[in-house]
Image (tube, rainbow, N blue to C red; front, side, top):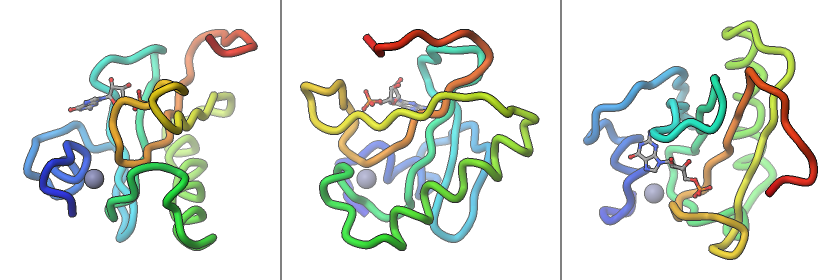
Length: 111
Ligand code: 5GP
Ligand code: ZN
């Protein structure tokens, strides 16, 4: 828990958020500023500033294995997952999160 971190506060339920999935290690909630009809974020409850600080395959798997559980529950088969790592890559919240977006066509390369 990092007391300065907004996603730690969300994981800790200090900030009321639209939680769509939770297990012992991970929480998922709708993005405040959605970029697609479906746009949610999956975060570990433990604070890692970015992908660079993920210290075990287990930690990584805990985050990623939650995604198909959530999409299945939502009835979504096609979706885009994004992790922005570092400011230049577009990261603005420094608690690792996976964006999951669906419900529209996506272009490539990403902007
Ligand atoms: P990044 O730019 O770091 O990859 O993504 C951060 C995301 O978090 C953005 O899509 C932004 O809309 C979302 N976000 C930032 N603050 C909050 C918040 O307080 N609540 C929710 N639900 N989403 C947030
Ligand atoms: Zn945090």
